[in-house]
Length: 125
Image (cartoon, rainbow, N blue to C red; front, side):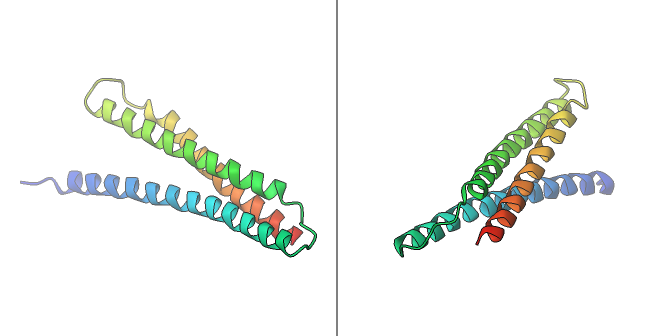
């Protein structure tokens, strides 16, 4: 007989991993797309001989956002690696939490960097 609660837990875990990965992809798309769009805009403005607004801070925010997203992905991997080792008994349980917290913090930093960069860019247009 199949244990429904265990099967449900496994499927929920799989979906949480997938949702996390899609969220990190979205975060990278936000920051990377914003950086590319900002560069295209500045190139267009400069090509027309118009004064170019100072967009160093928004661009720096997008770069920080991309870096934070990369680090969030790294800590997501480390979390999963720790969970794997805990599940096969190689290490004591609970060690993955520190990687998980740091990964979430980097993901939130990436989102905050995108938000700040976008607000500053909109203000300077």
